[in-house]
Image 1 (tube, helix red, strand yellow):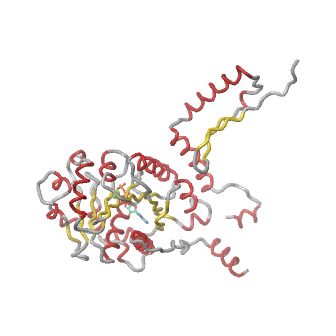
Image 2 (cartoon, rainbow over the protein chains, first blue to last red; image 1 turned 120 degrees about the vertical axis):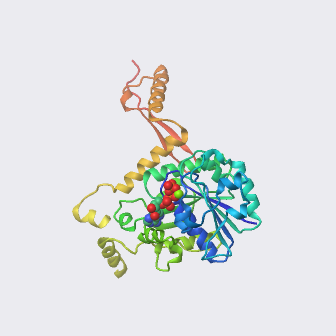
Image 3 (cartoon, rainbow over the protein chains, first blue to last red; image 1 turned 90 degrees about the horizontal axis):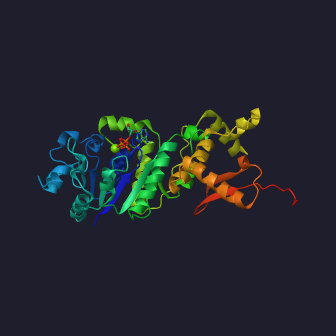
Length: 266
Length: 87
Ligand SMILES: Nc1ncnc2c1ncn2[C@@H]1O[C@H](COP(=O)(O)OP(=O)(O)OP(=O)(O)O)[C@@H](O)[C@H]1O
Ligand SMILES: [Mg+2]
């Protein structure tokens, strides 16, 4: 029986789709049967981030409105043909074509065949967000360490409680170690203290995310990607493994490096 | 960075600590659904009630703030009272 995990954020552009694609792929790499659902109707993107955009025939709205069977709409990821699938969002249709009950019914149908159902939520707190969290067993809230993103994440924490979903977990994305080191970006303990929810992962701001996305690949497939490593760690935590958080100081500023040198010498 | 600050005798708060402070305040307001405008209104009413009972020497010095505690948020009013003896 699958666990349904919804990835949401409040603020747009903080990395929900990137996170969904990487976690889905990472879980599949470990042999889990995974389906990723793009719930961002009208702004479909998970397909391009996963590199599957050319293979779409049917979409989420086709499934909900009964134009095809659920199986027919699932796109196989060629890298993991037996166990990684995408259910794409509709690109052109009316946003209100899908209801929370539709999402619950769809997930209940998929639960039997998969270990993980990951849902990529749209930004905002409107209908699309409600659809995305309705079937969720677990919720991951993505934020960056910036004021507006954290504020919106806090709003989501409140709404998640209001919808009687418990224990949302936090992913802090796009951490810039250099800025943190010089005191110009809130660090992980600050953000965790403010939002007061459990942390499940920290992901550095990393060019490899853009490069992977350009190629229609995902960072977890790139052994040299720091962000990929961070996402693999999160996937492992979802599988119940106890993995320490990454130390994001690889590209620290010169001063921070000097200070660290003095510290370790002493 | 503490090291540089000490070197130049600077004690400016970092932009991240400013962000954190501002966020904590704005989130308390968000959470209790109290806008800064309503907060001012409430402050005026609180002062009016208090003035019915005691003499408030300097209404300007009254501070009504929302702060974050461990498990709950707090509304705090700090009202300096005059110390003039009974005549
Ligand atoms: N860790 C990272 N390092 C560098 N770039 C990143 C990182 N995470 C995300 N990005 C970039 O940020 C942009 C937004 O990411 P993404 O589309 O995943 O966000 P989103 O939350 O799904 O956005 P939307 O709210 O529009 O759905 C993309 O261009 C992506 O490549
Ligand atoms: Mg997205």
